[in-house]
Each structure stands twice: as C-alpha cells, then as structure tokens.
Image (cartoon, rainbow, N blue to C red; front, side, top):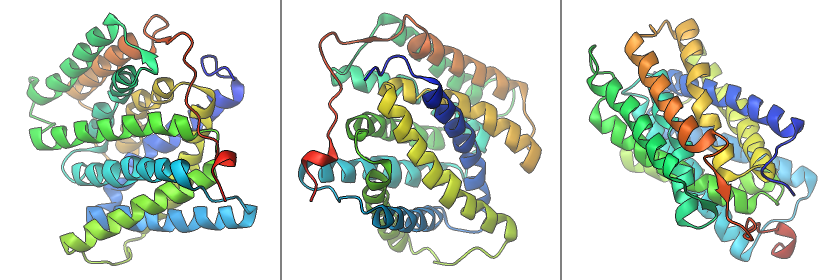
Length: 310
C-alpha cells in the first residue's frame, strides 16, 4: 500500500472531511449557546457512539481485544475526550474562525510527534514553518487591532492540538481495521469520560430547545462525528498521518466563510493576515514536497483487527 501518493477516492474523502470539519467549529459555537460545553460534547459523542455500535452490530463486525482494544481506547481518549473537552471550552471564548486558525498548526505538531516516534523524518524547514505559524498566531494576539486571541484559550487549544496530533498517529496504526469498529470503541470510551467530566462540573443535562442549537447538535452527531470520523480513518489508511492532518490547514477557510454567512462574524484584516501566516508556515514546514521524507525501511505499524479480535 502506497501511503505517499493518495488516489482520487482518498482526495475526495479528504475534501469531504475538510468541509464537514470546517462546519463543526461553527456548529459547536451554536451548541455552546444553550448547552454547557462538556455536556454538549458528551451528548454529541454519546449519541454518535450509539450510532457506531448499531452499525457494528448490523455488520456483525468482530470486537477488538488485547493490544488493539487498548490502542482504540487511547485513540478515543485523545481524539474525543481530551481534544473536544478542550475545544468546546475554548469555543466559548473565541470565535470559530480564530479556533480553526490555531488548529491549523496540527500538521506541524503531528510531524514533530511522528519524527519523535521515528515514523517520519524531520527536516530543518519544519522548524522554520513552525516559527512562521506561531508568528501568525502571535500576530492575532498582539496585532494593531484588539486582542482576538486571549492567552488562556490559546494554551488550551495548543494542548488540544497535541492531543489530536498524537491521535492521528495512533489512528494510522489502527487504519487497517474497519472504521466503524474503531470508532465504536474509541468514541464510546471518549463519551464515557466526557460524561464523567460533565457530572463533575455539575452541568445541567438537558436537551436543546432552541431549534438552531438542536439542528447544530444533530449535525454534529451525524455528519460532524459519524461522517467525519469515518472519512478521517479512510484517508489515513491511504496516506501518512502528517498528510492527513493537513485538513486542519484548510478548516479556517471553510469556517470563516460559514461564520460570516451564518453567524454574521466580521472577517478582519488582522484575522486574515494571521491565518495566512499560519497556513503559509504549515505549508512550508509540513505540506510542501520537500518538507516530508519517510524513514527508509520503516513501514507504518498497522494493527490489524483480524489478529486480535474475538
């Protein structure tokens, strides 16, 4: 399997994932208008977990065990519980467009983590790209206009970027398994943790009454979770982990356009300049042809469900 040259199907799945993922940030902002952030995330992924479990049951897929089960749980904790707990909190305090710009550094974070784990090679230009991307984030914080990116949400989103970057690497190891089974285990694990966090926070467990919020939650459960998570695993099966994470570079374009159209947010010059710097840095450091080189003789570590399922 060539994970360096994706075909038409992979690129189509990638484009669909970018569109759905870009819409997610705005949908979460709407969800946070009525639901407590952690409860909103728990409700979303609890419902998505039920859907994935139903799909696995209908398809009669074997459930994982042993090492594959443990990796699925870790994947779920990183990609669902930690990442979304942090992002739902941040999206109460910053706009969806700003959040997607910060999340555009995920490919660089993923590349750095992959290099540290010796699955991809790190080049000097990755460091240059990182500095350029962080310069763009800094510009959004201390540019000529008002501060649009406070320090606390920035730190929280950087932690979320690390969590999701590592989850993409683990997702690569699990990509040989059926995406419905992988997500059934992972999202259920994450939803349980989010529910426990919501209970600890004392959130009110209510269903959305506002039609706008209800439609946003429905979108997040179906297309934004079931659809997006399946697409991500299909893409990473045929591409590298760092390349798959490039979708985070394109999220700001989708999110800012949707936010301007549906939420009436003003697209400022400071925000556009910062986004351009971040995306340029990510392209130079991780996306451009000379940025990535796989380690010679080292194949991706794919854990196949057929070996450890019951």
